[in-house]
Length: 280
Image (cartoon, rainbow, N blue to C red; front, side, top):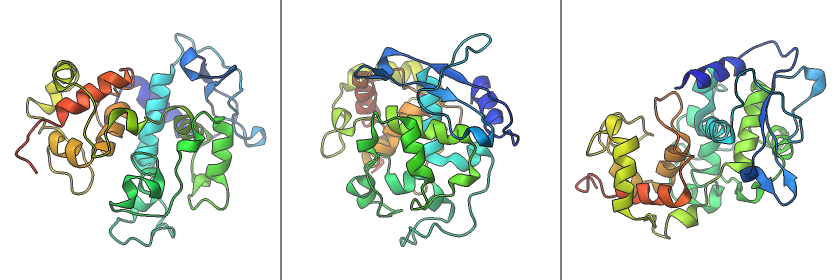
């Protein structure tokens, strides 16, 4: 985890919410029509409520954090926010889960309901445990994060949002609005990457090989049932692999490759799917 990320996590865990600390950014990539989406990182007094997407940014002393970092951190919170925030999830199981294959902890992760492809019960969650009947998040792409936060904290949503800092909620809302990958542009119907594995080799050798080694079998912090094989995960759980390639892994020293183009991500996936081919 980077020094900046550790500092932000400390900010996420400040118990006192008095005063305001905002780091914002505005870029063309966050444009929807004529409206710019502002990403804010804030700790607000309870009387101020949640930060909205139109909040004016305050310059950081040295440099503003950009969308790549903030959306990647939101993606990691979506993956598993509890260890990042150093909080214990609620005791027992999420009542939305009839599926007993999931651990109690996993039933309180965003990804366990809405999936690695963000399609909920319509996507990869339909065929892989843990399973819960959850809606797709894809229709929320481009929506003001403040509106998404309202949906997260709604009483009808079976999630303990009152346990989370406002900043964490905003990062998750911003990720859902601006950070979801488009599965069909990277993977075919069978989960195979649409990219060029030879082009992906260069990315793997430049960004991944020092930790994961030549065969992709080293330093994996995977999910339950994952063997220590990037190739196996990318072939058998491609949506999971994509989310972690783009956003990184909670509390792991792994690069977020969100800065790469969609084409380059597809190339990298194609190469990784070719690794360790004897591991079925």
